[in-house]
Amino acid sequence: MVVVEDLVRTFGTGDTAVHALGGVSFSVARGELVALKGRSGSGKTSLLNIIGGLDRADSGRVTVDGTAL
Ligand SMILES: Nc1ncnc2c1ncn2[C@@H]1O[C@H](COP(=O)(O)OP(=O)(O)OP(=O)(O)O)[C@@H](O)[C@H]1O
Ligand SMILES: [Mg+2]
Image (cartoon, rainbow, N blue to C red; front, top):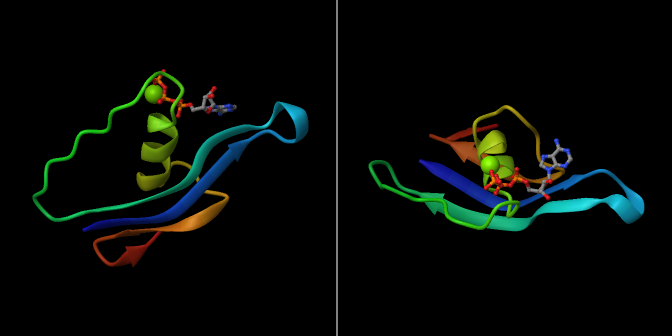
């Protein structure tokens, strides 16, 4: 249903760059219940924004129900 492959998202550049997602991969089957857990700033919102189509990754792939975002 949702396939996430090697997602990378960096905010900013140079010395102040923040590596929010450093190569995230997982898949979620239809009907599967998943919880996303992590300390503040670990990249949960960054990941969900990309899966939801609100933001773009710097690299990697997201496929939702067979459609590549
Ligand atoms: N638009 C942005 N511009 C710059 N840095 C950002 C931006 N969005 C997120 N970040 C940074 O990326 C990192 C991950 O942030 P994110 O909001 O994804 O974490 P989170 O796990 O959702 O945190 P919280 O539990 O506090 O909601 C943090 O260091 C954050 O400061
Ligand atoms: Mg958040």
